[in-house]
Each structure stands twice: as C-alpha cells, then as structure tokens.
Length: 273
Image 1 (tube, rainbow, N blue to C red):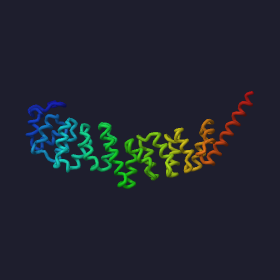
Image 2 (tube, rainbow, N blue to C red):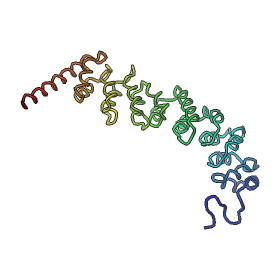
Image 3 (cartoon, rainbow, N blue to C red):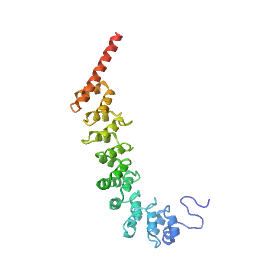
Image 4 (cartoon, rainbow, N blue to C red):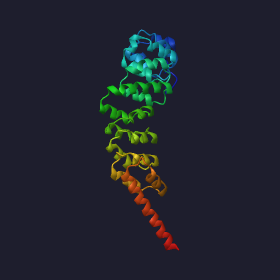
C-alpha cells in the first residue's frame, strides 16, 4: 500500500500549513475532511476555500479551537447552514461560539446536539434550553417526533404535555426515567388514555412507584386501577386503604382484596393445625 493513516501518498509531500495554503480547490476539498491540524491552519487562509470547503473543515475531528473560531467569526462562512451545524456539532467548539449559533438551528439539529455525548455538558444544556424555547413554535407532529428521541433535560419538559400523542411517544424514549413517568401520572391533566397506556406498559406498569401514582390519580380508568390493586402485596393494599388521596372505589377494591387475602391466610393456617 502506498498510503496509511497519518501519512500522505508517496510524492504528495507533507500535509502542512504551506500545502494547505497552496492546494487548488479539488485537492483542498479532498483533503479537508481528514487532514491534520497543520494543513487546516493553511487551508483557513487558502483563497480556494469556499463555503463547501469551510463546511468540510469544521467537521474535521483534527480542527483546533482556534481554527473553529476563525471560521465561526467570518460572516462569509457562517451564512451557510452546514457551516453553523458543523461548528456546533464539533467536540472542540468554544461554548460562546456554540451559543451564538444554536438558536439558528432547526429543532432536529438541536435535539441531536442535546443528545450528543461527544459534546461538552454545557453545550448540550444550551441546546436543550434552545429546544425548550422552540417548543412553543413546533407543530404537534414535530413534538411527537422529538419525544421519541429527546435528551433527558427535554424529556422533563415534554412530560408536562397535555397531548396523549406526545406522552405516548415519550414512553418509548430510552432516556425516560421512572421519575419522569411518575411526573406524567401525577400531572393534574394527564389524559386518561395515557394513564391506561402506562398501566399496561411492560416496563413502567410494573414499577411500584408508578403503580401507586396511578392508584392515587382519580383520572386513572377504574378497570386499570382495580387490575393494579389485584397485584399489590398486603402491605401496599393496607396503604391504599388508608390513603385519602386514593379514589373511594379503589380503596373499596383494595379493602376487598385485603380481606380476601386475610381469609385465605386464615384458611391455610386452620388447615395446617
């Protein structure tokens, strides 16, 4: 083989700053995605560098903070959406530069930035903040799509939604935590359909904290509440019977279940004596 990673093919010379300044556009575009930082330093001032080249440069993992700043401070380059997107998504992007461009990105890009663990936590938090502000402008279908992929900080915001479609989509998001689901269940206007889905959900419907929250919510459909009661341990049944927040019909169902369990225990003891 004539070339390996980190080396240039025989006869091409070193990919240094001088080469970066002198290369014609075809060679420049070919080398920008993977060239070393020294080459990029020269490419930043190469007259052949255009919008396409700038977009390739800011996606190069070897680009330095100084080079990203040089591109990010140029109005010529930052009028291009691909350049702004590449700057914000680069792991070495200076935080002030990222904050400058985040509000200009589409919601899908913001969601990807917020969930990108290669980026600093501060950049990701700023992306979440920009995305939360954008929610007021987004159509329900877009929010549903976001709910399926949102980062943890945005999940907590979406959990306050009154839309059954949004909340149902949120339940399939791998970043949703138990406290988020409990928050949905305890919401003052949680849709009954969402509560029904959570009660039957294979992951969340079996969590004790989620079940207790469902039982305490008067909007939980009665059939689902009584089904949950049937699976509770005796100690939890006693708490439900005493809990004044639990709807009366659910308390009655828990009381009957508790009495039946006590009768069964008594029968077993008598049979064994």
